[in-house]
Image: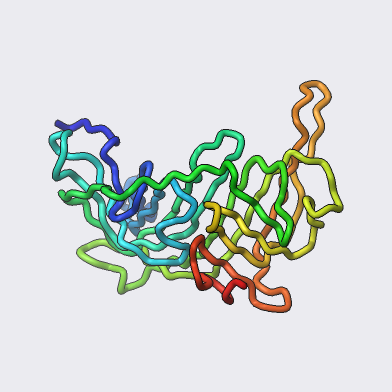
Length: 280
């Protein structure tokens, strides 16, 4: 049977995933010569592959800049269970996005974006997810700026990135193909917190240009600890007379790695910093 459903999709040892994507590309060089009769020729080009994984939970299976083996299982050949086609290869995480939506109380969710390192394979295999379901909801969770719990929060979007460096050279050639390699680069993060509020100059609305400590709770006890969060701007400030829509605005934070001391990125439940110094 050549047509299959994506309902069986899994990703290696990752838990509670919702699906994955992979794009395979090449960059053939175009040329025109005197003996091509005014037509275009193209080389085989350099091959590359990138992808995403989506899942539920307040933490991610791998952090930006980390290397992991991506194993994307598609579907059993018999559409019931067992062996099916899967893509596998070494990859580096480019960015992760973690989202809280208090307006719908949908489970906390994440997206992991990655770039392949050198080659990959398509081959028969079997991968299943037998882990416990992880699907926390945002209701009752705190979003804290400094010592103040922000009120009237509707959504939070945390993005942590690594500026992966790509390279192609004589050593990335294998089996007749030139591949793209990747190395880890610099770390950065941003966070957008939307509130249904119009007050300024209070604890619920830190000033533009200030550096802050964020605690984004994923459970009653665990949280992302981020310092320093530099407030770049407030966006989406609007008042609509016609619709009478609830007033809201978004506070946009960006990483500042230094404010009298090196900052910190600490994952939920962690006891040491993933980046920077230990959180207090």
